[in-house]
Image 1: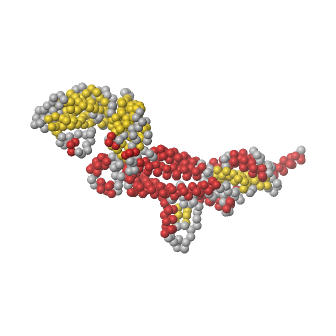
Image 2: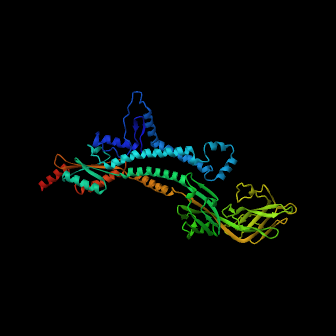
Image 3: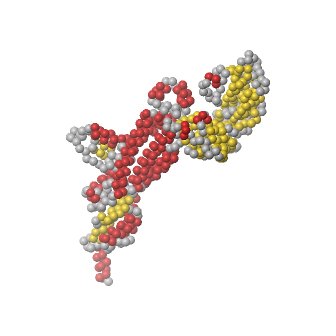
Length: 584
């Protein structure tokens, strides 16, 4: 991003342009067409400042011009890019309201001193905050202000012709010369053919041929900057119109893409609920396999969910969803992000009537899928006084139990080898009647009491599939059924800017590669007849920046040209050959 830094009407060009200007001054000390080394880049040209002895006086227009030049300078653009990166750091470290409001609430409860400061600084809503948006917009304007003038300058260079040769080619960094018997016109015609054959833009100018190559360097530079703007637009578009939600589904259950079906849902400020893709799917089965031996014991090998999904046309379709292989339905993608176990339990009252039966999903707490959760029974039992009581159980599940007396209840392997579930029973009020939201995987025991047997010991029991725990005082029983289902957690997202961001990233890489590895250079070939009637050929090259490849390229071109215009003997060599002929 080569730009001019300026104050008032006085400007300083970038280092590359200054180097080109120095080469030009050394080459010819001339103006116009002979300024051969100028304009090898689209950097703004240097202007002379005006003003009084005490410095220029800036009016309103002058200050506006100064501010605009500062905003569109490389230094300010880099500062804004750095600030944007720094500004994204708190968005990664501090819980964000648009991502998880429960985490934000927990953070505020745990940090009562910092919360007022964070709220004033909008650190819970970083990406929609005023200060982050200001940096984002200023960077966008800075890039636009850089690209537009440079694009016009580059178009002008493409429409123009390579400049004529400097008067003294010997002062250029790459130079060679030889004499030939060929006519000057033949040499220049041959030079045009050779240079055009090497994809140079070439033209005859007076007694020389001027050629130029490497325009893709500036094209790559402009492409890189345009790609940055594309990525900024894609990021903004994705943030404004995105939607993302999660859903935990037990085998055999389904999901319909409506707002009420989500466990959690987040969306951009411009996203409308009616924009949700109309589809539904059922989790037919989940398959997980693990390494059974060696140092990678328990490492997942296969995670895949077999689903049946239905789009707006009403047709059933089968699909397999794997990690990093989402199900694509229209503009939505369904990702598989987690899995666990859902033991099936049956709760009966004192008369044996089933008051609850179903699979209860439990959340893993380690890599071996040791899981915890809660079982909540709304219709529990009536005590001796006839008062209705609700039931709750804290559940601790291990798919592979180490065995009694081993000293640990944690799972030894993630697959269902020796499943065991420990239950602790409570009775009272679950608190769901208050209308306040609850975590379905946690049991609120503030209004509940643990079941106790004679002697005051709490009721807790470890069950294997098929076993039953009987509750005291005629409260009923709970059975751990032999069927254990698996569940999978899915993320359903619509990210409209992802494709555009990927295209911008690829274009930025291509543009940066071109701007770094392609050299802009000019070649001149001058052919004039010497005083002795022999044609003198001069060949010189000039690059935008110093490069060891330029002399090599010039030498290669010279070798190709000498095939058409071979060197003639020097005067001393010619006289010696003539003398040898006389003697013979």
